[in-house]
Length: 315
View 1: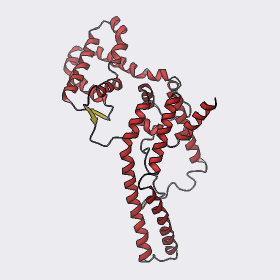
View 2: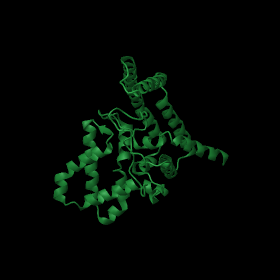
View 3: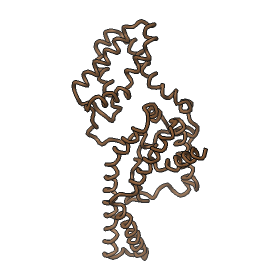
View 4: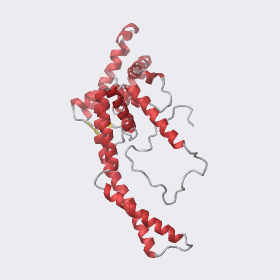
């Protein structure tokens, strides 16, 4: 069992359709005895506790909780409904009958006849096609759900989620969300302090390279500033800000460092750019679902939120 917090399970997409029990060419799973009875239930409990720890750290308002529950329900409905839902359910039932007939015939010791074989293969291919089509439909809905979730949460709450890791007992900074919200500002101060110590010749030589890295960081890997003029302006703004910090005395820097660091906050600055212009667009590569969506739109969060809202109403 887990003794410490473990990394976010990012490989399983929130909206991914349930995979079949076994696929051609793959083993059934762990050898008998490797997973004991009750282990799956314990894993689910661990995930629920981690989700509850995160919710406690986020300090959602009643309105935020209600909005999140409504969005999570819509996401869950999209996973199980849609234009192909009925066709998929019927195909599953028909495939089960075809597979059972094929199994019974094959178990007699000889390969089943052409009719049974063609029928089994037909449903195998049909299910594969329907799964792919359903997955594409769900994938198309991801940006919509993700964007709505981002609008429900504050910047501070999104920052808490970015640094959250599943664990049984929450770390101190999650128990203290104000502390977690201060992390980005502290990183900005540390960065400026580091830049102040760089020798002048190196700063003059490499300031453009450092500015490029800062502008790339604005997008957090998901968005990109494509307008050349805006990119140039952001680079120059960064260089001017650091140059100003470097020119300050130690006393002046101590007084002004928090204000200067706030101007380097990537999330805040990117929001200002997006709000002020249309120069930010999704990258050409498929957009990955955010960490917030992986946690807060998972189907298992629905009963947790329902219980919380019920407790609030009765309290």
